[in-house]
Image (cartoon, rainbow, N blue to C red; front, side):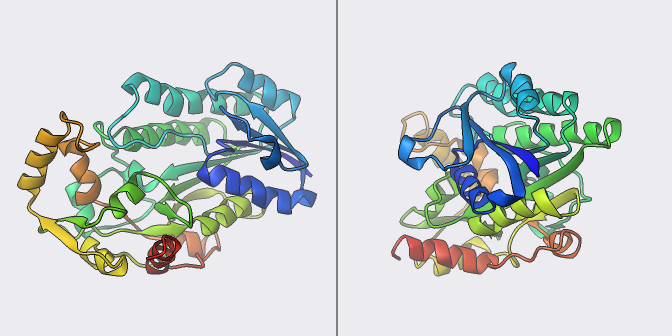
Length: 318
């Protein structure tokens, strides 16, 4: 039986993944959850070792060695569009922290490294408007969107590791919008508005993955999934104006210049969270092909993109 370490184990996906691991504990030796915070006593699951640690810490190497970890599932990250925290802090956690973890894995001969990346690694660029992104297309990232840039940089690091250390199997999942009954992230902030802001002349198509599909995909990687890079999304994509109909709310269609002006004025006043640079997050959505996920990884998401949004909307009582 293999020993497994999960970073970000108290996060939204991480906590659900730990629950799923516990349901299959007969397949594992040690199960270790690592996060910067510990669960409350009533939340702890029998058989799981919980550790309070930062992925940037030098203790990571010691933890992996002492627990004889063979499989690492890396879920720890800061989700930010424009950088609410300091730019250095976010970079330090996302990029330096991931590098520290990867180095520790290599030193102790970890067999599998499973990384939750993002479709954001492709970047938010005009070429996305009419492109179905496949895994062989270049990642571009965005310097002014920290989450996108950091996911890109970590993947660049992992690409080098694949060449220099081929014995450590890698699973890199470029995940679309994650939604479930209790999701709370920058996308849900956008979706919960009374009117769904849409940019005139841009389809802004969304892809989504049900959180339970993602949990099962991560679990499959610990077992028999084929190593590789995979986009993770349900079937289909939904333009923003169609999405408004699914969510039973009006579409607030505005020209790009007006939205940029409004964000530029309102952000310094504290009336909106984001600046005009964040509009590309809606303007140039990456639309992910899931063909490789289904054909090579052999996992077909249970819910399509539309079904995921419908499920999330119903969970809000709408």
